[in-house]
Length: 200
Image (cartoon, rainbow, N blue to C red; front, side, top):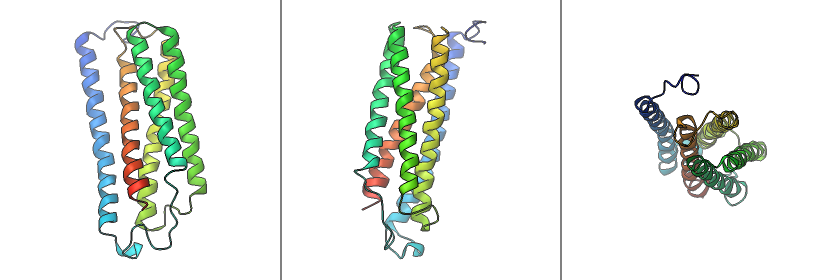
């Protein structure tokens, strides 16, 4: 309301909103860092509840080159489509914005669906030692962030369709794009650190 109809978001206010989003993403980085720290600490010095092994003895892990690599390709593709949306926004290409935002939203929903299926077929659960707990905490929180980012992008799509953004005034969209890129980068760390390195 303030930004679109009342025109109260001056350049200075926009800079403040951008800084606020940067600080929020920085706090989210610290949040994930703490869980990664726990995972790597437990994997490099396996606790007794895992039998002194990582992954725990007789615990079957997921195939890193199955569903996880598919989800990686989906999120990398979504990173390209959200960048396409931003470029289209800067050049006033409304059809490009609509198409790329819809594609990114579909990628986000597809990722969430695959992760839900992965949880359903996982050969271990959250209560299978610290290994299961850390795996489901890290991937689960990331999944929630993907879901929140998808909702964020759906709101941006509706705002775009209602002409709330211009090529020079689209801070809300920029915040959503930054958040989505953050989610992409966290997944790359998850894929390499948890699925590839942590499962072997």
